[in-house]
Image (cartoon, rainbow, N blue to C red; front, side, top):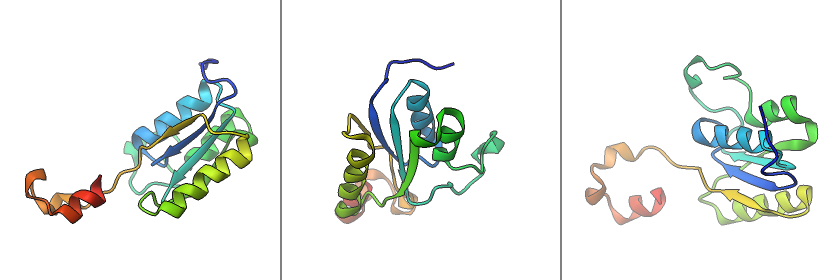
Length: 129
C-alpha cells in the first residue's frame, strides 16, 4: 500500500490531528511525500476517532512510524492567526527546502449556536470562513 505520486513533494496539512486532515496527511506520506508538516491546535484530537486503531497517537507519529522519523513533524498552529500560518510555511521550507502542497483543512466549531448560515452575524461568518 503506497505509491510514488508525491515523491519528493513537501506538504503542509492544517487540521491534521483528526478526520479528513489526518487521512490526507497519512495518504500523502503513503504516496511518497518527502515531508509532511502536520498542523493543528493540538497533536491529538479531542474525541475517540470512533475507536479507530492508533486513535490516541498523533498523526505525525503515525507517519514517522510507518515511513521514517524525518518524514513528518507537528507544528501547533492557529490558522486564524496570520503569524502562525507564516511560521508554518517557513518551517516547511526550512525542513523540506520548499513547499509544494498546502491543504487548508482546519476548521472551527461552535457555530451551531448561531443559527442558520443566513442568520449568522458577519463576525461569526468571518471567523468561520
